[in-house]
Image (cartoon, rainbow, N blue to C red):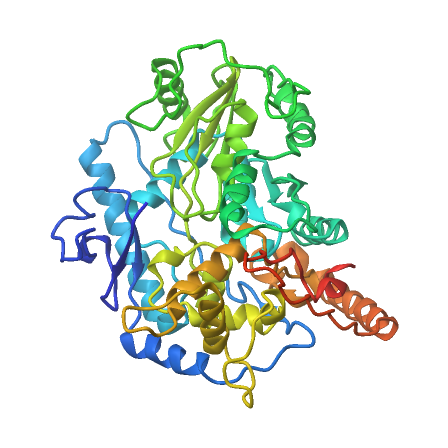
Length: 529
């Protein structure tokens, strides 16, 4: 999914730029209606961050407490509709509601907003997946799961639609097991009615050395290996399926071919979109939509068709399509490191009674969250960054990446800056511009890719992330203060027992071949609760 930037202060889909870069008069970009639209930042802000990246940074000895979703920003809801309305009437109502929604957000929050989805067509995909699904799964990267969990979506699914919601922590092999358990406990305590589980991506050897010519191939091979924890995930969802009258999934104990029971449709296409779905899938979807009650499109009908639909939703680049491929046992959804790769929602039959629906990755609105964190968390395409140095600085303040890569200082008397780290990396790798200068932009992008791939790991602890529970669940108001006081007392006790540990320096390379960075995090102690 190509990212298009809207340069208007009050952005609407119809005022976005087309994929060719010029203004478009249509409601959405011409070549692809599902092009993601973000509001374009002023050039002055970009230049300001470039200058900041050239200043020496201070290494953080502990993570500062960062507030996520300090204010609840509602997501746009589909306006009421019924089958007496024409398609044009329904879409016109949706467009008016969505444009009013954008106007209100921009008027109220202005520059406090993060990058979020401005394309109505993408939000329509979310509405459709939520409507037809019996159980909804929101996937979140276990390195920073709270960032990927918008409370407004939780409130919509659990409180308004009254549907089961499951949080799935992905890529749990990149963080300590205690950290995963701490986050699962955190979400269960903070979000009543939320079910939680986790899956692994793959099992990389943290002690393995990657030669330059083999490093990327190894990463790609691991990426194709899918989730090794699919068995545990199937065991988790099977009771939900049986409870709703579906046939449970089967797991085949065969490395490299781990899969549930195959569909009885041998000629099913490898990838299905709205325009390339099987006839059975189309009929199933149409029947489910018609079952929705006219008074409330979100309310489930008492007489549902046979079978269960599982909806996968969440931010881009959290592993939705990859997990679906693993559950199916073959590649039915294309995957990519680039966020927004999945375009229209994709439907896949896991067996004759279980239909899985993959919603395109959607960036939800939030305020007062650093925009650079969206880059670090992988929901903004790094190839389209106007400046990557602020993201490198964010990581370098928390992880000593100059030691991870065994970099040598260019300016001996100066402290490290994010820009100098990029210069040193470019010199070490031999990356230069046409004018012979270190290609710092290429160096920064490569280090960011290493971070997204898990070669350089930065993860967060529940201690370093706060969320305002009261704003989305009034039932929590009475005991929230007691919970926070108990957490503070526990944190004070743990801090008194813990002693800071120095991160050992990485050995210098003795070979001309590059050794890839190890999977390290100097703040692992903070995450082991």
